[in-house]
Length: 340
Ligand code: NAP
Ligand code: 3JN
Image 1 (cartoon, protein in one colour):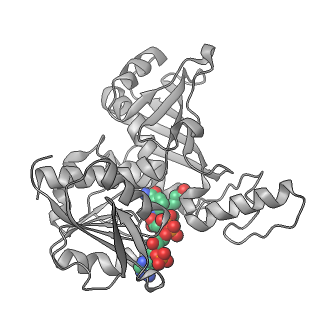
Image 2 (cartoon, helix red, strand yellow):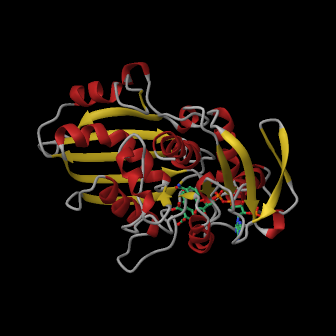
């Protein structure tokens, strides 16, 4: 990064993702001239630490973005829908973590390891969208395979951590687990059923076609990021009683023949990937290894013996870091370095 520095705002600063964004700006030494921390009126006046200083949280308002260069949003889709245009018209570039703008043709949807060139499209609306966490980790792992062999079809099943639902869901898994092991009553507030010692095959709401919104996000975002409407994608997204890090079982049908060895060699060199694939030594990705770091872990690479050009992979990544905060800050780094 050059000697340039930027006025940065974090909208949703008190939330699970916003909190990680603040830590990520610090850890990556993002050149922040001044930081503005924004949340709802409930949090106004609360103080959060940034680079050793205590910074007061301000209420997010239409005029919050005067003088701001880059605004990182993670305050929900409705908030982004309302406030991102105000931020953009104040002259700042919004990097939005919600689904509000992801499928807008005038808004780039970016995974820095996959399509950094798309960032240039921010000029149309002043907004860049961060993909859904499940899409991000899948595409970091699949991009090298896609570029070398082409992809006809992806079949993915996810095992998603509760932190993807935010702070209240983290508390719900903790409280229910504690209640169950103490044989006392528990309550269910965030999810439609108990999450402790259970799996819920529903993430977000159900749509007319029988899929959930989370599943269709994976389908549509994959096609937009790969700039290829022909890729078949089918997803089943499942919430599991894990605090941090999503896991995915990914089956890929390539256009040209591919071996497990070729995929291993490609992924060993791929940006943002850590290959963990030594089954004899019981080495493979797991949420406990992915949580708290920024790489996408890939293992269990093997040929799908039921079709001609098929490969299976197991992929884990920290959903709050690479799946949200880190991806957004990586976009901000490229934006600051190449465009502002
Ligand atoms: P969270 O822990 O519930 O935090 C929500 C944040 O939004 C809080 O800072 C909250 O402020 C703020 N907020 C809510 N309503 C607001 C309003 N009307 N005006 C201003 N601020 C408001 O949720 P989270 O897990 O951090 O997720 C936040 C959002 O990030 C999600 O809704 C989603 O759009 C996005 N997200 C994206 C991914 C991804 O896959 N890339 C993953 C997770 C989340 P208060 O504390 O004042 O209430
Ligand atoms: O559930 C997860 O693991 C990821 C959740 C992401 C999320 C949660 C609430 C609203 C999103 C998202 O990023 O797609 C949204 C949203 O639609 O903005």
